Image 1 (cartoon, one colour):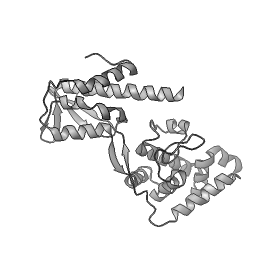
Image 2: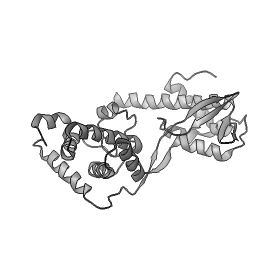
Image 3: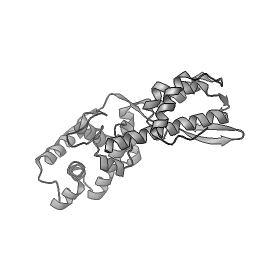
Image 4: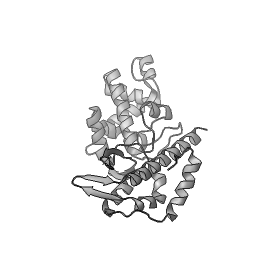
Length: 254
């Protein structure tokens, strides 16, 4: 199997996938469905993501929710006039510095925003100043020795603090988040060790997922095992996905 070296090759192969005749039969249709859903994205409760972010960065979940409410009203696709993106409105440069590869992925965005809030809380030691830094930048807070004399920032801090005081503030919605998988060797076969925690968005695999019907998968105890050819096919499709993601990101910057 040759390696994919360009997004053009990736798109060509994606187009061929639907017409392929199955050469390998699978004995675990339910797992194949999980794998397909795992790569194409999973549905998650946004409020659960807020709780996870709060636990990970040891900050109040109410603070993260309040910022998300003020920034986008919990809209993962929101874009500001300044170019900030997603649930917690991350600027492109800030997103990259926080390790957020897809600002429109609600999980990545919320985790990145929570990390940024944590950094500002540790830097300034005060919620109001951390919020001001989130809105106007930490440099402005340092320059003025407090909340900058910007009407927008002053109103922003008041708005978020008011949302924090609301009882039962909740996003009340589910979102589709992207994920990938990891693999480990098991004797003559290769076992799927994790469906989640990767960085593939998977959106472009959704329409061309017939390749998964060719996977030979079986369950051995608590492990799911696939043969080498199926593993190679899966790795190839992940490479295709990464090439297409990279192509889209480069195109967005041009």
